[in-house]
Image (cartoon, rainbow, N blue to C red):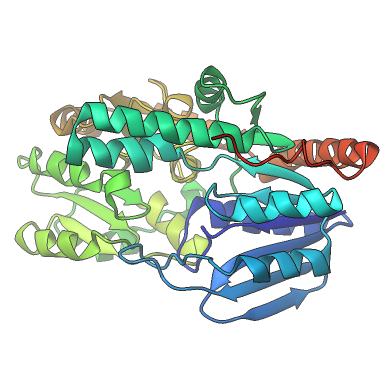
Length: 400
């Protein structure tokens, strides 16, 4: 079987989607006789092949103010690659223009098409920014329209994949057909407490460091990283506290300027080597995150594997990742409540929380993830083969 991942959310510094796809490639290469095809945007046209793994990069322009993300617009080239490669199944990781190519390919060749709902677009990218700019009514109407579009799109796929039970319930409530919960996994050998490095801890925080908070991810409005900075400002009574942010994004410049006035904020670049990130996590005291739109929370799971309690927000998939045995959740948007939760945990004995966090992470393996996904893939491909090439009705245009 040949599996194709088709997405524009893949670049040298991208996060969870890239981690998921690379873990899938490793699973396919090590545990199956399948082939894996990846089609993504890139700086130039390029084809890279390694055994049964093939990656096509299609020259695409960068998105303004979106770090290293590119907009894959050459849909004819995507269609040509799909026709030449003839995958048995296409998995989509973004809901924009690429699904139209995948559905057209299914119409011609009967290829199964599934969609992984990695990002809750109606809430994160539609409602939240519009609420700030135009108010609640406009934001609610736009969110409703986005949900209607995505419901229509995803219900044409052969399967709808989601990372958490909370998200599955939300999507079911707005009309998505039978979302399949496929939790992501963790490399528990790389991310582990034994990576703790006291010399590294002193280098990133300075000689006066007593406590380190860490966040790893995109530095953008969606992740609400400013709320973490505001929480730090409420903790002025802790001069030995450091907030370490690891990652890139459109807010990096503004955060650097803030760091010039508060040296307790430490910015580090994106870590492409997972071992480097694992060492940073294990050398901190708490993981903090303020993003309310997580669909799984892979970075939280990596931090838990490193033995870190978590302070996050009571929203999205964080409700599945964090309870009172492994950390604290506070209301979204409340920096003072986050500061209070951080202070309370720093003043407590966190050893039992650290052990609980590690045990929880160990229950999420990539092998279990892709064993489950392989069953979904096989079912979709088998049903598609039994039905033959779908007719026009099965791949009708999106609802108005």
